[in-house]
Image (cartoon, rainbow, N blue to C red; front, side, top):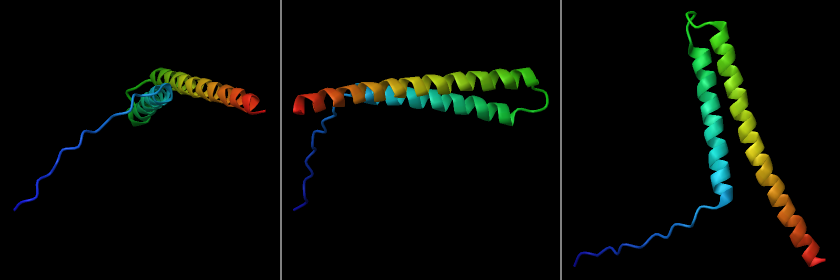
Length: 88
């Protein structure tokens, strides 16, 4: 008699704010990396100004990623401090 396989219902946890912030930060980093790769792979036909602009945009994206992660860490630290105060 062949074994029957039961399909198990996979429950997906709701995405937390932490997950969405980290996903957003990763998206910024990916975009910045793509801009920098494009600047590196460009030919001599590309002007120095275009490469400089790509570098500027990449830095801006890295800053956005850094800010969003810093905000998340600040919020987490605040929550931990509140919990520690309640314990005392």
